[in-house]
Image 1 (cartoon, rainbow, N blue to C red):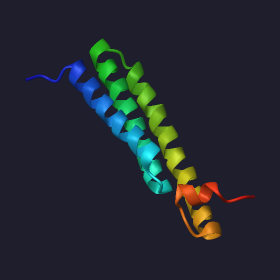
Image 2 (image 1 turned 90 degrees about the vertical axis):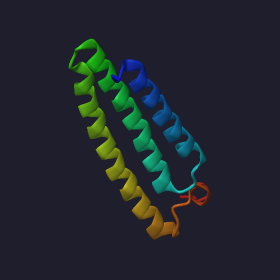
Image 3 (image 1 turned 60 degrees about the vertical axis):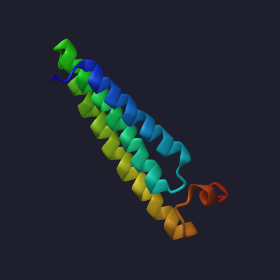
Image 4 (image 1 turned 180 degrees about the horizontal axis):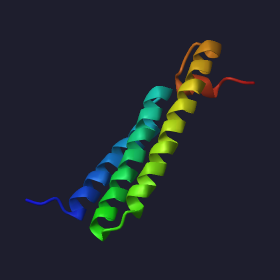
Length: 101
């Protein structure tokens, strides 16, 4: 059995759905960041799948840039989480939403 474009897109859709549900329903900022990473990986899988199907390298080049953005997102997100823990003592998104100033 060969893996076709539709198989890869279905997997990408499942990953995207898992990431979206996780980003919307989680309260812990670390878990929200992990869910965003799953969303970005789903997009990467779709880019690579289309790149392979079309025989073009542009999709794989786009994945490289998405990975750079994901690395920057993790770095900034974790730095923000560390600051929030130091100031407020929590990384719960509901409690952070109520903080002022």
